[in-house]
Image (spheres, rainbow, N blue to C red):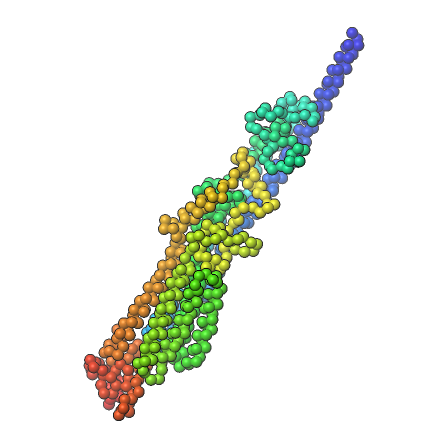
Amino acid sequence: MAGVEIGAAAAAVTAGSVGMGLFSYNRGNYLFDQKNHYTRFTAGLNMAIAQMGIYKQDIAQLTELTATRQDCYHGIAAMGLTILTAIYCPGRVGLHTPPPPAWLMGLMFVNIAGCYMFLGLTLWLAMHASMRANTAATHMLTRFVRLPIPSQGMLDKARKFGSSYEEQPLKEVLRVPFTRHQKPGAGKEGGFNEDLQIDQQAQGRSRHGYDVPAWYRKEKAVDNNDTCESIGSMMPLGAEGEAPEHFEAYRELQLEWFPYDVYARLSIFLAFMHLTHCWAYMQIGHQLAETRALFACAIVMLPMFVLQQVILTLDIIPGWGLPIHRLGPCALWTAFFAACIEYERWFSSSTQGVCFLLVYASYAIEIVYTLQLLRLCRPACTAPEVVESPGASWWPGEWRLPTAFQHAIWLVAPPKKLEDGQVDIVAELRDAQRDAPRLPPTEAAITAERRLDVHRALGQQGESAAWFNVKSGLVAMVLAWVFMTFGFTIEVINQGTAHPSLLNAPGLPNNARDPRYRPAKPGTHEPVEVGTGGVYGPARGVHTSKMHRRLADLAA
């Protein structure tokens, strides 16, 4: 009996020693895991905080790019208005000397009016784009893109006391090393360590699935609760993609101001094209009517013609259809030669016909040129997506932009996906909070939803207000050129009659400019003033009492 009692005592001591060893071993693992858990919890949040700080910088830099562009457009437009006002007020011809022909003044002032219009559009469109972008950025930065700072309650939940080991099930307290923690199907939640894509070889060497401690399941429930806010509610039509949420939300918000940004840039282009036109026409009137510098005027036309061609080359993609817009600067030459004929020394009907033809050519060129600009500025419905390359502009293919100007727009939209090797810790926290990873939508769904978002931003008519305003301005320019052509036709019809102008009294030369003369008729010594009848009395139908004083003095 003594031997049996000694054997039983030895077995009890051995069992107790084994139990104490297993208890100490598992408790040591528990305390070690809890220390690592708290360190990992705080380190993960610190990395998420740092990454969210980068995201806030992303929003600020994207917005600053838009605001800086608009500031540049504002400065250029203000400079253009200053130049234009100097041309229109103290610099215009005809203030102290006889004015140029009415058709030349029409070419000049229609371009001045168009320049004023597009410079005003630039100011308003740029102001809207800048303010809307800054408002969106401020809204996101103050409400959604916030640093995931943990609360005291979260830190308290993540912290564990040594005595919490007593809460573990007995099978975990006395688990034999190298055995599984629990069997498949024992839990209701499924695997507990399947969040990440693990290499097969590494997975064989790690605890995964159900083979994890019981406290791991509790830690996931604590760590993934209210860790980071989501901005999924800001995503219209569910157009989520694979990029970080703040990129997706910002790209959706850009739909509300990128058309204004684009057409502010196009308005600058249109304004300066009209500005160079009106300045060139003003030089024609100044050099011929005031200084009589015929060849100096030709020298002015050449650099202005080259300047306009250079601007067209810089802003419009070469090869975009038939380059009809290249015809626009040619109106400077037709107007110049027509004005030279207007100021020739002796009047002749043949040269007058050539002058009329050149004037009609100038107006026709302006009409065709404006219609071409209207076509080029129209947003494309199915534009190809821009290839994303380092340091270049980029925007989604769903955005409707004037393709002919795409290299002069300088838009930068947030990327659609992360590059290889980049991680989104904040998104991982959100996915863990949702207890399921966010599944990326199919490519067809992404394209369809974003296309609907673009059309929603463009309004019920399918076009943005910015494009509608620019289009209305170009249509108004076309109507102005048609009206001027019609008015010039009326003046041509009335040439040589008793009322050569709708504004002048009968017998006065057209436009009150320096009179033109026909050579003296055979048997006479005095030239004949065109439109008055000469020294032998006014033309038929003109009363002597209304004859110009120069004729009365000459007859006396």
